[in-house]
Length: 325
Image (cartoon, rainbow, N blue to C red):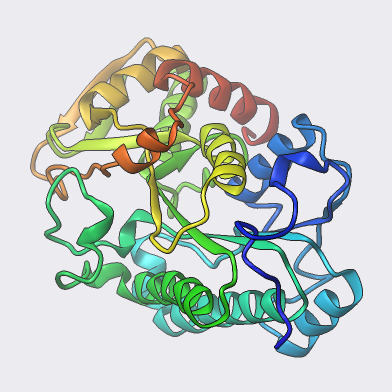
C-alpha cells in the first residue's frame, strides 16, 4: 500500500528529532520564510529548501523525483500563487490551475514516498462571503464564496479536502491550517497590488520621506479586520505539527479585531508621519467585519504572542532595511 502510517500510532513526534528532514515548500514567501526562521530557531538542522527555479512544483514528474530522491519525513506546504482582487480577476486560470497543481503534486508525492506528516496551509478566503462572524471552521461550504477570489478559494478548499481524503482512505497524517490576514517581513509592499497593511505602511513612509502634508485613505475607516504577525503563524505551525493530528482544518487567527481607522493611525505612529490622515468617504469600505473564530486552536493550547503594535514596529524596521528606495 505504501505511504506513511498515522503518527498517532507510529513514528516520533515532530519536535523530538531535530535532524529530521523537513521540506518547507514556498520558503521564500511571507509565510514560508517565517516558518524557516522558526524551525531554525527551534534547532532543526535538516531543512529541505528549493527555489522555484530549482524545483517547479507544478511539474508532477519533477516533484515525484524530488520526493523519491530526498525522502523528507515532514512537509509544510506554504507554496501558492497569491494575489489581490485585481490579479484574481485578471488571471483566474492561473489562480485555480497553478494552486491545484502545486497541492496535488506535493500532497500525493508526499504520501507515496512515506512522509510521516504533512501540514497544508490555506487562507481565510475559503469561507462563504456571508459566513457568520467570527467565522468558525464549520462555516466551510455552507454558502457562496466571494466572487473576486473564488478561483483561489476553490483550489484551497480542494487542498483541505484532499488532506482529509488521504487521511480517510490511507490513514495518512495530513492536516490543514487556515490563517487570517498575515503581515510581517517579506510581505509584498508593491504600490498597486499589496494588501491593506503593507499598502498603508508604504504610503505613510513615502509621505514622510517626501514631506507630504496628508495621506488620503479610502473609505470611512470603520471596517473591522484581524491581523496576525507571520512569526505567530510560524509558531502555530510548529505547534500543530507537534500537537494536532485530526480530520478537521484549524483556523489560525489573532482573535483581535482592529478597525481600518485604528490600523491606519497605528501605522502612521510607527512610521512617524507627522502630517494629516484624511478619509475619502466617497470610496467604498468593503466588508464591514471579517474575523476568524480561532477558539479550536486556543483550546488545543496555542495563543498568539505578538501585539499589533510590536508587530508593526518589527515590520517597519524590515521595510526600511529591505524595501524602501
